[in-house]
Length: 90
Image (cartoon, rainbow, N blue to C red):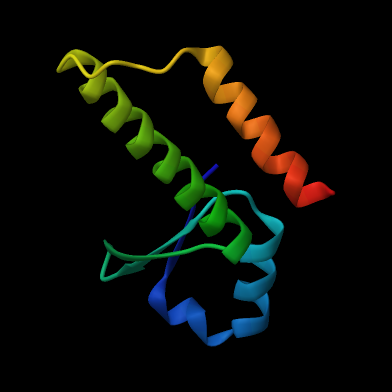
């Protein structure tokens, strides 16, 4: 469930830090009853950004397919990925 707190509550930084790091949800900060900022842990931020990056790449791929760009066979792509990451592990 979303946490909403007034900006005046930011004075207690230790409590805010604990709320951010123990929750998988952002904290919405209000001023005079209106939303103004969002706080979240770095872990949550990184996960959100990774998801956004993936969605953007999928959108580009989808647009390319719609425009007629020839897709590579899945076997080719997977083979290249296996080869690439096998070198990194070995």
